[in-house]
Image: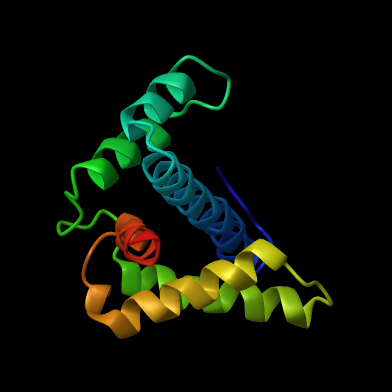
Length: 133
């Protein structure tokens, strides 16, 4: 993809990463809720797999969360936290309030403070599980 306006590539990266971060948090919450309600979280994966919500990204992150295989990052949590800050700061500068992005920013900050910064961004699932315990 060729973007010829100054700043467009960075802006597109932030917009795409906003989707990634919201998706990761959505997966983490869905799996945590299923487990807390006595439903095998793998069933959530099965339902998503057979729906229009499915994507290779979702199918990659779901099992890693369930198996707690999150210490080898494809997107380190500390980098995701920095991007979340850029996303919300840029949105605010544009006169926007992105509610989901604001919450994700705070969760990533807390996860980093809890020592999860070197893990994969999906390690926020660990925080969700701890809160449910």
